[in-house]
Amino acid sequence: MTARATTDASTLRLIIPTESGNWRMGKTLAPQRVAVVTGGNRGLGLELVRRLAELGMRVVLACRVAEHGRAAIERLGGLADRVAVRQLDVSDADSIAWLVTWLDRRLGRCDVLVNNASVLLDDDVAAASVDLELVRRTLETNLFGMWQLVQAVTPLMRAGGYGRIVNISCGLAFIPRGASAYRVSKSAVNALTRVFADELAGDGILVNACCPVVSVDQPDGRGLADPSMSADTPVWLATLPDDGPTGDFWRSRSPIDS
Ligand SMILES: NC(=O)c1ccc[n+]([C@@H]2O[C@H](COP(=O)([O-])OP(=O)(O)OC[C@H]3O[C@@H](n4cnc5c(N)ncnc54)[C@H](OP(=O)(O)O)[C@@H]3O)[C@@H](O)[C@H]2O)c1
Image (cartoon, rainbow, N blue to C red):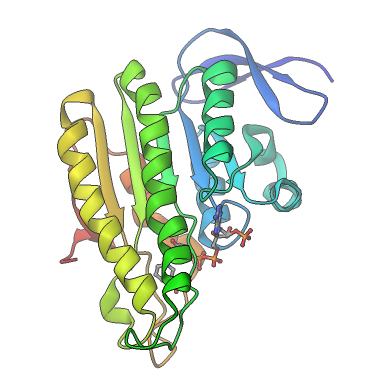
């Protein structure tokens, strides 16, 4: 493989492919945004990888099974050159540490973090009867995993004086019953978004949560609409200007109550 230069609107950086197909940075000619998308191998996550790469960012597709991520980027055509696949299980502290160490050593930065990875394990189970072990597993991924990843990444963002953190949540009105663990986890995500937004406000880091657009075709409103439509608000939040909002919960680029 040969080294090559690449450009987008504001950047120029030498990219050196590695034997594994992942890129690493050579001599930096100008800064370039680096974005991490968790659960990037499918669904909304993969669409977000695509959209951020289209904007010229270098995107780290982080997913539980690296092989699934490598298969996913084959669907990105030429944009795959801008994407690196890294293994990440957000419920595994070691996995988070390895990813952030790699970001620090290889790229020296992380500008955008999209916390998209999520599980819904208790569909149609009442809070009164749900197995609490299942609740713990839900919180491990949807809340604590995201929390720990933000803790690990913010030093890199602080060092760069820039950060955009987008937490993919859920408008709970779309889930009229059941899914108590999932609903509690997403309510907590919205609360944590506000807490981090307050803490990081002085560091150039904007933290927001959003609900992807949900299809109205299904009786209970579940199921994402067209992924490109669902990706619009997260991408907008990932690219906010420095004086953009922070600490809010959004759908279709409008703030909503959490
Ligand atoms: N779908 C909807 O109707 C809807 C509605 C509102 C909000 N949302 C939110 O939108 C986001 C994306 O939804 P989606 O429907 O695209 O999700 P999805 O298809 O169910 O994909 C979930 C992703 O999260 C990953 N993941 C799960 N546990 C993980 C862990 N411990 N570590 C790392 N990755 C993990 C999955 O990896 P694997 O492939 O390895 O399982 C997968 O890539 C989620 O945050 C969801 O809560 C969805």
